[in-house]
Structures are given as structure tokens and as C-alpha cells.
Length: 592
Image (cartoon, rainbow, N blue to C red; front, side):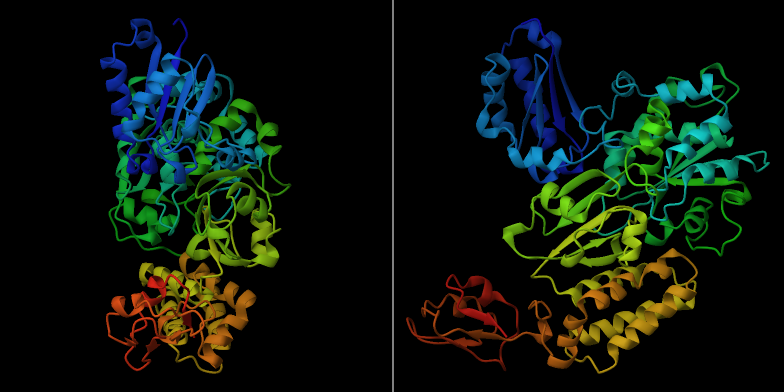
């Protein structure tokens, strides 16, 4: 065989958790040990790639033979031998393991810019990135464009910060470039801490050189001589691949002194964060790099004027920087052709929750929520009813079913009481209690508050106490109004973005699901049957077969009844664990 053969194995966090390392070892072992013709081995390239997006189907494997790509799903090491025999040697794909229509549906409405290299580029091989036009954009600006021309390109592209605030990236760079200082800094904010979010981690795991190249271009534009990537220590794979990529970039003289013979010198250090959510806020992040406790500071002055060690500093998140090389290579107009008038380009989201196709997606700004959830996500698990989608993580809001046609962009989501945020998107179904969801996010933000300002430190605690009281059956008349008043005060008076946005889940859920709050308070009922203190379990006589399954699993001995006769539950003894509900095959246990 005289053609090239490429085998790609998903080795993002999801792929590795599903056994990607073992699958790759199996391919290498089989190709070597099976006595496959030397010309196959000579032209066969087996390499790892980052997250392919549809994490629910890992381990995903590509076989590219004679220019035709075939993608396999749920691959285990034991399946490798058959793939080699039937597909690689004989040219007949193993159809039963090939991805189905849902896989293609997941990708059809996506437009991948930031994620375009994840799934094709080997994240541990700089030459793989270079072969995909990597570092071409940087070479282009350093040889053919001035810093101001580079900034102008980013401004014309309409790129806005993807870390949550949505501030125009080119304007931020321009302000910093005009500051006079002996040293300037550029920082990549990879301190991704939202529950259910894994966008930035996946980008660094899958294509770290794109982020590095974006930082180098940004440094050249603003006149920075040093950069930092502030990344969570909880992301060991991302940290390992990032450090490896930096070493490779230095060997190629893309980092260091007089880069590529120019007068421009720049290098990047990695700073590990200890997991404090508040360090995603730029002034707290700066304090952490400086060795201080990660606590926000009042602004102004903004970091572009006085940032790291008092010097002008630009802070961009991972996704923002990863967009930069593609904008430079393809032009500002190309990038601006995606998205809406005010929200240009694409956005990466972590699609999680009660969704059939969970994973990492990249969509054009302005795409309706309905298309994301039903066309890309495949709809709700177990065909349950859609209830809401939480966008923007703990700082965002819950958007109900009647607003599923809302476009996903900065302005539209703000109008309905939510935010784009860094890109978390959690789907809720009919079995989720909306009050409990608000409580969950308040628990997170309250525990992550740095405690520096009273509105956030005390206010979020009081919000949480009221929600706990409501979900435990002790809600009082006026609690909803009290939540609203307190939330408004916290938003208006907190020092940083954590406190200013912490009440969003409460306000949005009251706005769209007020009747559910009222049911908890006035009827002492949880409509979704989630809040344990508001639950009661009963045996439905018409369905009970007297099989005894519920009685056998009850830890409190609250269920009685003879075999083949209707059973009963003693409410005074019942601990409301729900074991009987799960055990009954006849749906004879009801929630009251």
C-alpha cells in the first residue's frame, strides 16, 4: 500500500477518562506486532488529538485512509484488532462502530475557529501545529505589520473578550499600547472555575500553541516583554501540555530574545492557581501572581493602566487569545462575517446537564438557544420536558422554555436576565427544582466569596439562608420580595464581578418561575419533587402488586404489607430517601 494512513485518538480529559491512552497503546502495539507490511508502518501516523467535542461518545478515533476519514465511537482496546484487520488492511470500515447521524447532527450547525485544531492537531507536537499554518500569523505581523496595524485588525474584526465581560479586545490592546512604561505584561486568564465549564481547559489541552501564538501577537501589539498564563492546578493535563508547548516554542525561537531575528523579545511563564473562583477576576488574579492573597481591588485604575506590579497589563482569557491567530491569517472581515452586528465571531460553550449530546461546541454568535439544545444537543435526555437553560455559570441566569428562540449573544442574553459568561451552558428538565438550582449556585458563589466587601460576604450568605429556609419548608410570606430587594442591593454595591453577578440565578428564576417559589412557600410543596423536606411518599393502590421490593430497600422500616397485597408507608417513620421510588418497577410509589 502506497498511501498515507492517519490514526487519531481523542486524548482530551474526556477521551483519557474513557480509556484513550489504552486505545492508543493498542493501535501502536497492533501495527508493530501484527506483521503489517512495512510500507503501511512507514506511512502510518498514529497520534493523539484534543477534545473532539462530543465527549459523550469517547473514545473517538479517526481512521484516515486514502484521504477518506472514518470516525469510530466508544472504542475500547479490544476493538482495535478488528479495525486494523477489516478497515486498515482490507479497506472495509467496521460499520457497527462508526458514528451515527447524531454525531454529524452535533457538528452540522457548528462553526469551528477556536476548536478547529482540536481533533486534528497533535497538542504535544509543535510541528503538527506548524503544518496546520501555526505561527504563520505571528510571522506575518512581525515581518509585515506594525503594532498599531495589528491592533487595528483586531478592532475591525469585532472580537470581544470571551471571559464574560465582552469588552472589545482591540480597544483594550490599544489603550495599553499607548501607555509609556519600561515593562508591560500580557496575561492569559485560564482560571476557569464555573461549575460545568471546561472550555478553556479543553482548548489548552487540544491546541496550546494557538493560545501561545495569540499571546505573542498580543505582546507584540501592546509592547509587552513578559507574559503569564494563570491556570488552575486542578488541570494537570492542560498544564503539562502547556509547559511542553512553551518549551517547544522557545526551541523554535518563537519565544525568548530577539524573536526570529527581530528586536522584539518576549517570554511566557506559567502560574498555577490554587482553585479560588474569585481569582478569575482580573485584579484578584494579578494579586495572586504577585504572591498576595487573591482578592479584588477597586477600579479604576484598570489593569491596562496599572496592573501587574503596577505596570500596564492586558488580561485576556484563553478563548479570546486563541481567536487571534485565525483573525490575523484570514482577515478582520472574515471573522466579522460570523455572528451579529454587535457580537462578532463564534463562541465556545460547554453543553452539559439534561442533554442527550453533552460536550464542547463552537457556534456563531446569534444562534438561537433552540438550535443549540435540540439540533446540536439532540434534545433532552429520556425525552423529558425542557425546563430551562442556565447560561453564564453561577453568574448567569435561567432562561425558560418560552424564550428558547433567544439569540445567543451578549446583548440578547442580557435582556432576558442572563449572560454569555465564559461559556457554561447547563440544561435543566422537568425533574429539576428551580429553587434548588438557585440555591446550588448561591452555595457556590457564597463559598467562593473572598469576603473583602460586606455586600458580597454577608449578602450572599443571607440570600442562601432564605433559599435554604424555603426549600426546607419554612418559607414565609414576603420571602420572594426580600430576595429581590437583597439581590438588587448586592448587585449595586459589591466590589467586583463575583458579587455583582451572584444574585443573577435568584433574580432570573424568580422572574420566570415565581409560581414555583410560591408553591414552596405557601403550599409547602416542591413541584419537581426534589426538595426532601417537602416530599412525602405514598403507595398508589391501583398500581401496587405487593411484590415487596419497596419494603426490602427501605432503610427505616417505614413500609409494611403482606406479599401480593397493597403496601403502605408510615409517614412518621419515612426518612424520604426515595429508595422505594427507585426500586418500584410498577410506578406504584408516588410523590406527594
